[in-house]
Image 1 (cartoon, rainbow over the protein chains, first blue to last red):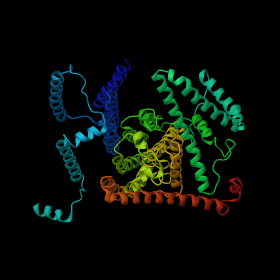
Image 2 (image 1 turned 90 degrees about the vertical axis):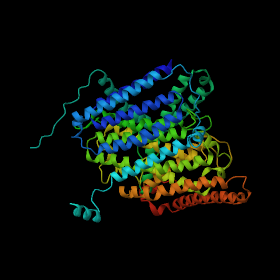
Image 3 (image 1 turned 90 degrees about the horizontal axis):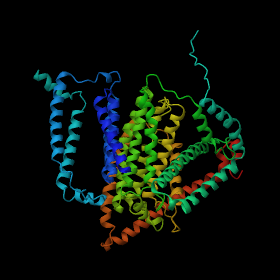
Image 4 (image 1 turned 60 degrees about the vertical axis):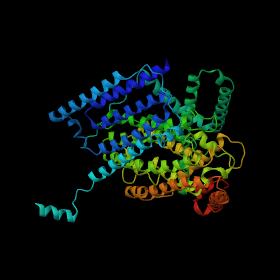
Length: 175
Length: 443
């Protein structure tokens, strides 16, 4: 009874926050709605007994990613914020991507089997660690390499725009 | 002639009239009376609290359904957090006074101004709740709650002793860290929503400082976790029973330094000096809470002190033996409180001793020195697990030697501290002025 009430509480917050991310035009508000959604999803994880997952969700997404997101967004001007609306070209792309995602989501939901019993998931941190560095070592390492590549790419994109002396000369000769 | 906008006089009617009358009566009669009777009230409060706890534990607790029990415990934890903040604020001012050769609050209450925080709170409640016209209203109102509530939530998983914990989760250490990580969002939110340059600068500093210092903080704790093989705070504390030499801080040299790196990073994470850039009074008027007044400001202030105790409690549980006695006596929550309070006190001591450093120095110190150093400590502590293993008899003697050697170093540091204390007490007349000397103990 109480569990159901709490589930619907968290689920309602998650859905409302998700809608608010889409409908809000203020980019900082969007970031905070995203945080509200992440925390309520973490609450759902807690409710299901997946404490490790919920805690990691808060620690990584809220404490790390969301703080960086808000930090970056704060540097944008407040006067620009209300004009945050997609143009016609962007809207087309959005519709295409959203349709593909929606079809995938509907297919996965309709093909899911809800009649199976609860998965007996290992809740202990030790078991999760053993499986991460045992059975799933390959995907785990792949994910970390992917993250490293993303980090290097971000550092490359964010490098100082002022060209180095040699690069400037080459550009000059090319033109 | 300059135009000074004037507010219309406040008209009290209905509920506001009752509240105003009550406040006048409280402020005029009851509070002075209570202050006159400060000692009896203080002792009576302690007696009532102890009696309440005893009655609840002895008779009521077994009969209650769990939801009511949870409610009572949460209210108790909330009260504890508030008491921590109230005593912490008063203590901070007393420590500041002593370090700067003055008295600090002396008048409110009878004994050394102990009721100063209560009086301040009463004053703050009466203050006008100002919200700047150009501020982002909802976020501005929400921010103090986002700062205070997670800091309090950290206490839900914090064990005060075996069995003295609200929820003994398997991942309680990570839970506490996650809650402390949410707290920064409130600060950033308040700073941005204020729509003021000072606030925004404070919030930005807080953001970049916290994100970078979270990594050395987590890595230092990870070294201790790798040494015990558990992220449950109760198990981490229980792994250190015995005496002072079985505390994790003395287990190997890497953990010894990990304690200090954790402590430095925790100073940065709850914006304590020398990392109190987000509210640098000398350059940003009051940093992220420049625009806050009244009780919203109090909530930010409370959040800081509640978080201070939380990080000190983490350091106590993980490195300093938690609720275990250093000499092998009974393990009680009292030891936990004593050690945590000591660490909070050291935070205050550091604040009033060290000057504030610049933001580029903060980042430089973290990224170039603290982060590689903690990585090294983590690596070393992990490798030490191979050596500190009974199956390797070659290293056993060496490990024991280092184990006790580190303990002796720790004791020497503590002894040095006490020697300094005694020296300061002996030479107290050289430091303080005529007025302060009369109030010092032993005058």
